[in-house]
Image 1 (cartoon, rainbow, N blue to C red):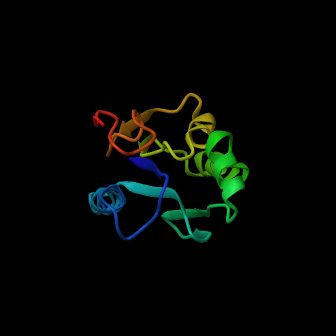
Image 2 (cartoon, rainbow, N blue to C red; image 1 turned 90 degrees about the vertical axis):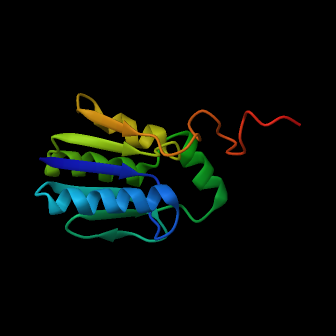
Length: 130
């Protein structure tokens, strides 16, 4: 099976980041063809990994989070067209939701939620009392 895994952050630390990386590795070991796409500190393209550099300037980074990150959108669209995944696995896409979701029209998707950021964008625990 060809699986495109999307995640909004590439890092060697952080719970969701480690889970996604290990999941991709284990699925690959079981014979699945994996392509991992995420955002990070630099552009990088390997056989099974695409990292798109996040904008340096705070204004553009926040604007891209609200609207569409043009480079990310084009790269995801191109990856879907060339890789032709059987399924797209979404992981913590709340950082660039439109960039991730718009190119996926008519694609089979699966979503894993690793934290409560999607329901509490402040990330501080919406149920906290003051």
